[in-house]
Image (cartoon, rainbow, N blue to C red):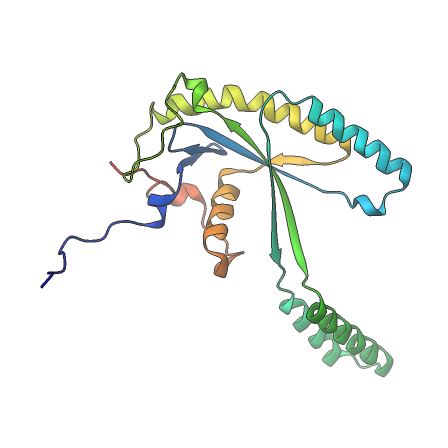
Length: 226
């Protein structure tokens, strides 16, 4: 008969993630590489005139041709919860004393309800992820897969962070300038926003939950095992 092991199970979701830590708005990965994320606005291409579309295509092509480094485009879509808005309309309908206004609010509320039943109301966010390769640290075996146990960083966090900033910040500034020429606005995600982004990605049932300030945690958000 097989006896159950008495050793505690210590594995957590974090053991399967490649994130070592998030410091100064930069994500440090377990391999020693790092990334920063830029959130950008979008434009409805279909609503533009033909001339505006041509100009945008040309500007976007110029942006791509100006890149001398890899760039990842990430689009996140999530279904919007507008239940609070529906409740607000219902409350306004109850408060309305004018019969005409009351009827209009009712019809509008019913229209919104029928619309979201037939079509999902999605919120989309657009991100540009700029990488810092471990090769820039002089590591040649970066292609080796991670072992079952989390690898230690090839260098200290402070050194990796300093090198990453030197490499990433000029790339970030270049991207922000190019986005402005296209008519888009971009901004780098902060440490707090990155933590909430990853938290919501791995906890979709509680998406939108606000976390406390990262400075208030007794331990880092992500901490490699010894």
